[in-house]
Length: 500
Image (cartoon, rainbow, N blue to C red; front, side, top):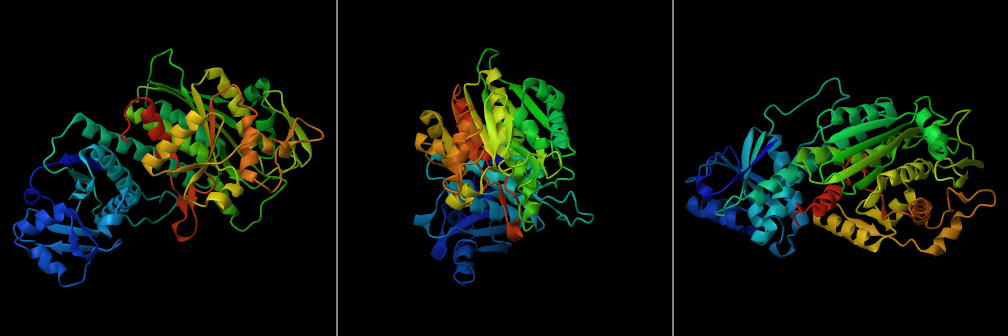
């Protein structure tokens, strides 16, 4: 979809559909008030009939308002004015885009950005309008034989800024939003594909395809023989049970100065996780195609970097594998040697994500990153602790942790920091190896973070457990594209292009 800034008088906007917000109890927003005045009070008169009161999730389409240049006016309920927040604004933008996309207008103008509290807030609200609109109109239908697509989908959305002047900063906000949305869409596409299509090799091919689109992105794929030579015994122990060979996907984006240390993003790429010998229950196992959402988010973030041409160096690393039961698969009690030289007793083969991540994190050290963030659908314990609203955050550097929390808050893709005290490390003790790969039922998300921390002592590191945020269940089943918004906000902050 194309996005452009619109300014001037509301009544003069010539468009197939003009979106205006109305607060609860028919409390008109400034844009709705201007529309009402231009129409000689027709809007207020219609609202007095009581069909639309401005409650959240309400909407109403009006035709032929007198004195206005729009063919239709779409009223979006905002709820009580005092309770309206950026989160409510995102919902309103998403609802408007979805409604228009499923009706006739191919272009529209939204006045919702004028709800921004101050001029300083406008860039952030413009960016969020783009992200929310793209998310609302996203569809995954690649695997359906018959697809019912909107006959006249929304193709162009104007974002109204009132009498404010267009500026480079506002245009950058639109670009930021489109870049984030592009990364989210790619992450969703990869995550929603089934495991028989999205294999480790397929992920590698998608990275190569992305690399061909930009001379700033160098892509290298390490095969199992190369990983064996590097001593990646932990990663390769997971792929032994699969007929699909593991891949280590390495993406180097060089948008910054050649000598500038990069930000490293490491994403778990388990394209299917049956649990190995410690096999999972069959109910809901189909959702284990989403165990590569961490890797998908890294590839999505790299795509956004390419689109935005970020003036920053970023390294994206995705260890990709399957975890299946087989005669050659890991067995409970096996001991494997990681690339770092540390040995691991595999007490539970379903705790495989940390095994592929630990070798990838050790490999990341060669890039001398300024900071490294790993992203993984790592533990069900994190879902129990935080549900679907926040990703779990663990870090060995408080400044890095606070920057990630701030990026999550600004983007609406929130993270919550959990402790990683030395008290928990003892749960990983093993009688036979340097450590066990699980620490028991208690504090499962924390002990998983503690495990990874043993391979990141030489780096400023953070771990995001996205097991509860990466996909939705039930009737809304599908990937969310998180935490691409958080990662991109973090990267935009690092290079001074963020809208706070």
